[in-house]
Amino acid sequence: MKILFLVVATWISTCGFAQVIDDSKFVEFARQIELKPTNPENPVSMNAAFFSKTIHANEEAYLLVKINVHKNWHIYAYVPEGGFFIQSEIKMDLPNGVEANLVKEPKVLAYEADPEIMLYKGELLFVYKLTSNEVPAGSYNVKTTLYYQPCDPYACLPPNETEVENQLIIKSK
Image (cartoon, rainbow, N blue to C red):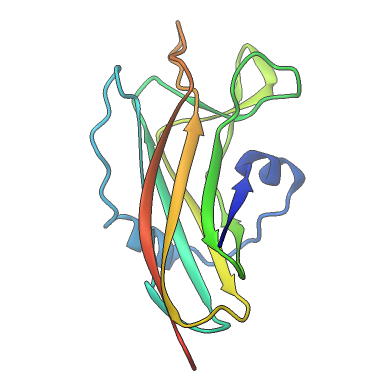
């Protein structure tokens, strides 16, 4: 049985829960994560990869989620309650006993028309630390979904989502 793990990255950012980590190893690894080209009809692409696909039971794994937002476009990092725009969300479908915590997130930018609204632009990198507590050894699929509303300075496209699946292998100690 799998659980749906929902992370609203900007809410975490706003509340200050993301940890500060030495991210140089993740930035270097993220350069290898390929993204589909973007364009005004498809302004957002996303891919994810495990820093190490194989871990031992009760160890940590890091999942890097890389997103590219087309030039002059943005997606919403934070929208106050009752706001018109759609806040971006990253969802993960994880095996029972696996938890994910956001440990690195990209910089957010204030929306010029309303400084309470925060945006993401350009290339983005989110790093999640996955911990396994008493998860049986085996191979598990981890589905990562990005839900977002892309906008340029003149208009917004309808909300959309993109997903990718990665394999995590947990070995017994």
